[in-house]
Image 1 (cartoon, rainbow, N blue to C red):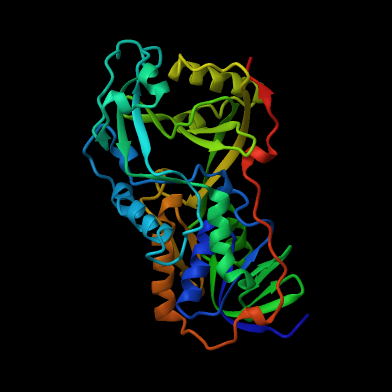
Image 2 (tube, rainbow, N blue to C red):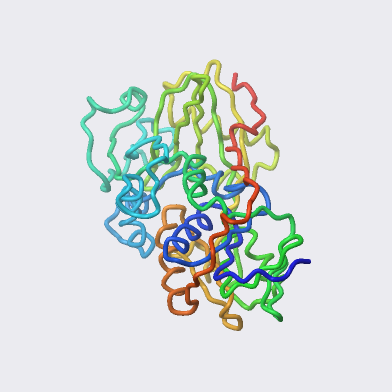
Length: 392
């Protein structure tokens, strides 16, 4: 093996969280290196629908403000500043799928439990007059409101974060953290960092265990996501049933002109019992037909994919109240991070930088661009790898 390479910070995990942290640290003068074992964005990042939540969906029918809502409120404006090139990192090359999100109450009563035929009105967002509702919702919704939330193309986001510090990203098949001598073995190379940031999503649990680090354990919350492909209308938003986002639909327009719907929300969480993929597809399509009775599904194909949300364990098993940054109690060299929600990534990176400024002095090492580094691929989105079936 080669002689250890002295660096400031080693980041493990090439999703949005790890790449954003890399940009923030390098911009602040740190000599940081990011390690990715597969493709950039593989897993939780590419499974995402790309929604920059404002927390509004947690208060669609109530004024109660949760800790998570408060954390999310400032995120759309923070992301917009980067997308407009007014704040780092510079995300002007990111593609926006939509500049806002809708929340609507379905007109059909078949979705509501017996004895609860009166829908609860929405309170979050800005009420829209019916004349500007999307055509589909003019038929199938009784109320529509607009939320200040962006929908981003995740592939372009990953590429935008990767591009400025491409020479600082290394692909490796094996990563071994050896805290006894303060090094990390990456295939045939050894790094000696002053700080280590674990940003590998679901991989953090294995990394912490292998390194023998005492830190908050990780929990995972699985999802079964639905996709539809075909002659579909563009729509972005939450179909809200009794105050809960029953379906969350985002749209991708393919180069072929066809449209893909990604569908999450409560549907993705409550149909996990359908282990049979055929049964799951039938359940999901039935839910779509109930929510959108006027939607023509002729010529439409359906597919599904399983996604995992990784985050620190909470006492009640619910999602954490915000971004989680934790320095290991017995190893101040090691930090484990989980954004909790994709939208909280900037807040997560800010917390990492604040800690590094107090614990890890920057250096004047030469940039890694002096050493040729092979390009790391960006992961494919789920609709490109899916197996499709006709709905009818």
